[in-house]
Image 1: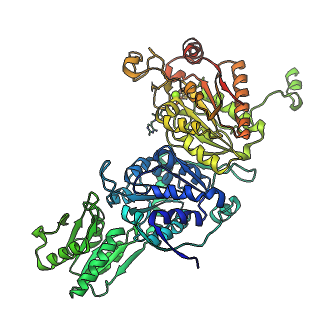
Image 2 (image 1 turned 90 degrees about the vertical axis):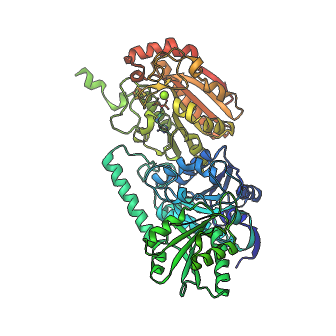
Length: 374
Length: 254
Ligand SMILES: Cc1ncc(C[n+]2csc(CCOP(=O)(O)OP(=O)(O)O)c2C)c(N)n1
Ligand code: SF4
Ligand SMILES: [Mg+2]
């Protein structure tokens, strides 16, 4: 067992990358995640493991550096925050289209536009419904603690290579900046080209030896028939991911009459709300999606017959709540509470809103933020 | 009878590079791309670096370049090849990495990526096909389009008042300390092809020195886009392109 140390979420991501044998990081500074690049440069992993760390000239360049490194079969990572992720959207689509593994960390801030440097969760649609062009999906992991910021780096690489698909760690400025005790992962050496080939196959562009055909990393196929075949192949892959990789955390759901659904920081807030409600004799529970794609539709669907309603809480004007509604299929009411612009939801506000729901006074407008019933 | 005696293996003085894959190229007859591909394949074969070479192909008429030369390839998004090459070279400092880019790809949408890769002195070779037009999308204005030149988006001729001047990106690149070799060549005559080949060999070899970026512009023809016969296009290029884009070494620190 390694020691537990106090770290910021962003620092945990950086250290986890070095320790899990990441080969390269490329990134461009943006608040609230610049500590990832800074920590990596400070740690000087070139000296420790030979990991490449480079400040790119833009997020566009960073994501394309990721493409180049990923196509070599290497474990590569970048990180940014909302506006930077928008700039990366083109490259993410190409990486998904070329079926390359990599990790992109989005430490979300409020938007749209330059928005604010304060935390937000308004990139949910961008993460799971598109962002870039074409029919592709990202595997999206949503940590709710500094420990998970550490753990999801290795998990992310495992999933990225298993499915040859980009993985996004989607978190927010609070999780990125707050400090908690973390159990660091054990240090692993970087893989050699031979090990990569043995583990994942010989698709990487490492220079063509005589014994194999040339490898090509591309997302292009001008033949409509073949392009459709490829899209069908992708869809099959995404269905397999949906079957195998759904992760969520239920909290006090067994006897709950009202369920909160929230991820990341909002889930931490809602956990507190559940505790407040339980103290007051209200049977509340929480479902925290850990993977945003694949989404735990079934977990939500399964509680529908036994609960009176669901309240979704997000730091957005209402994005994930549409997936909650999709799972509920109109069978019970779904309410939404959102804070935006860098404002945070509070356990007390969410509790007040829950009481209003129970009392039939949801519309009383005494809780700040964006509140509506779907 | 005579012919058969001459046509023997031992008498061969020239043959198609083994790295050129045997398939019909999609280029218009007379297009410079095909000639440059041949030079590229020969260079990699002669240096014996097939196993150690990774090419980055562009978006442009050469988008299918990876179908023609038997090495490992990465197909980049439009203009982003130098960013891919940066990562590949940093992860494999002892391999040979090059980008192949058109003028729209390199000097318009990808200006940021090329300038910064060259400024960092990435140990890569950049092959830059300047045909003063967007060939692939049907002949629109490129940043290198000459003043007065007609394209589908400058039907009255390019005017610097409206759309600026033909950009001399190789001269700009040469100013960067990260660049060790910047040259401008052409492939319109046998002797030009030989000179370009020399430049290729030099540029690829220079990657071993790890001193910085090597950059080769090839002033090229796009007879389809220019709406000329191949022969007319070569004449037109010499008369109109060479004065603006003069052929020769711009910087040589190798
Ligand atoms: C982001 C993006 N914008 C536009 C295009 C359309 N497009 C394809 S090739 C091209 C221009 C290519 O011109 P050039 O780089 O000069 O190459 P050439 O065909 O002349 O060799 C454009 C604009 C694209 N593929 N991607
Ligand atoms: S359009 Fe121009 S650049 Fe493209 S293949 Fe034809 S001649 Fe070559
Ligand atoms: Mg062109």
